[in-house]
Amino acid sequence: MAGWEENIRRVNPYTPGEQPQGKDIIKLNTNENPYPPSPKTIEVMKSMDFGSVGRRYPDPNAKGLVGALASYYHVGTDQIFIGNGSDDVLSVAFLAFFNSEKPIVFPDVTYSFYPVWAQMYRIPYREIPLDADFRILPEDYESENGGVVIANPNAPTGVALPLTELEKIIRSNSDAIVIVDEAYVDYGGDSALRLLDRYDNLVVVRTFSKSRALAGARIGFAISSPRLIQVMNDVEQSVNSYPLSTMSLLAGEASVADEEYFRERIRDVLRTRARSVIELKKRFFTILPSETNFLFAAPTRISGNEMFEQLRERGVFVRHFSSERLNDYLRITIGTDREMDVLFAAIDEIQE
Ligand code: PMP
Image (cartoon, rainbow, N blue to C red; front, top):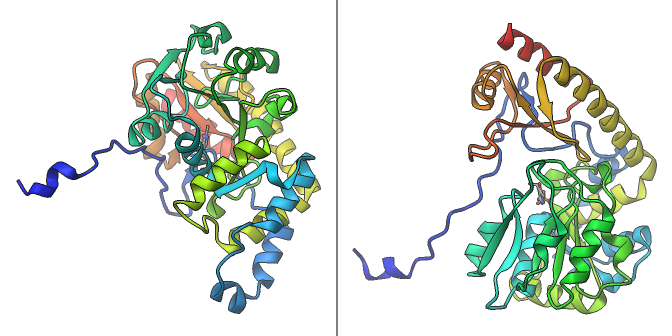
């Protein structure tokens, strides 16, 4: 074995959902938005002067997008951190805030990237089981720790924690940073942004990948106090001066400016979600209450894995997790009504 072998960092990377290609497939496996980004965003991309945009480095302060988000959320420009998707933002936050010998804590079950970053950055961690109804219990988060991460609404369950409950966790952990990952909050959860004025240990993380239909542009951001945002910027600037391309910065800014389109598409997804719950119940699925753009639903006639495989054979992609607690369930992204109809027809055929 070569000497350098022992110096290699060994990691177990996060596995993203697959990105199958092909026109006829129905892709309900990565919680993307089924609708395109705002037409105004598309227009900005089309009319961009790529000759100059491509030649120059992006604005390292991302002033345009930071300014747009600061006005939108009524916070200072020094309270916004921009990253390359919220995965980047979360990764920077882990690096920036979790430097204690004490373990950080997050639920078991939650976004499966959290343990990966913890391992990558050698942060000790402890996972706290959800209760029997897949709920987070604030009293479980009162023991001493090096930090807390809560996805709210949670993934892949879709279940939201009421703000009063989340506030208990933030309040009882005043000596540690609490990161609240709000990737799905635009679909119904209560945002912790309202608590920012009251707690100096709170960092709220958001993404443009779901409700703003810009997963391909890779835009995420954090909102917190100027002090904590400064720390995140210092960490990011020690790794990469330009985490976002100018194209993405322009797309993000245009998206924030088109509020009407944003609201309409959220309404469309919520309408289809309500209908999908009814249709899946007719087909004997057990479904967790969702405040997101996906449903965590278990078929009861055949196993989760069997349903997953059979849907896949029919060109319908959903997500299945093989861990013991989750393997009865499928995570089904809310698509267009037409896409959902194809899913329901495929389920009928499988369960015939
Ligand atoms: N947090 C949660 C809970 C997610 O489900 C996802 C999507 N995989 C992300 C963060 C990351 O999203 P993105 O990097 O596209 O912003």
